[in-house]
Length: 148
Image (cartoon, rainbow, N blue to C red; front, side, top):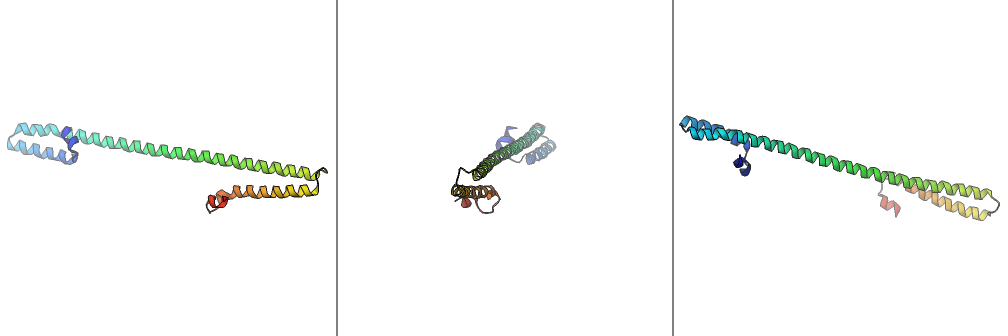
């Protein structure tokens, strides 16, 4: 068995060779050599089975590693998506709060028309910026270009 593993040869060929050599030595009358090759055949067969099992085990381990990497990637993407959703929610909440504040100030007689006009301009700018960031993921251009 150590011969098969150390030589790294074709185990199927070695198993076939042991059969041929066993038969040749048996017909030649050298029964001790025939018996030696008779004993080698199961050792080579076991080595071949062990090599096949090892390959299967390595393939399973590799597939599991790929699956673990894919799961980690999906978890990371989900985490990033949640973070973006929270950011968009905060932006929307701020914009809505500012709009309500603007409406409340515009109805009040304390603040003048010019202040309401300036606040309206600021609110429009905030709304356009917020909407731009909300639509960035759906744009076909690179987000880094759009944000610059």
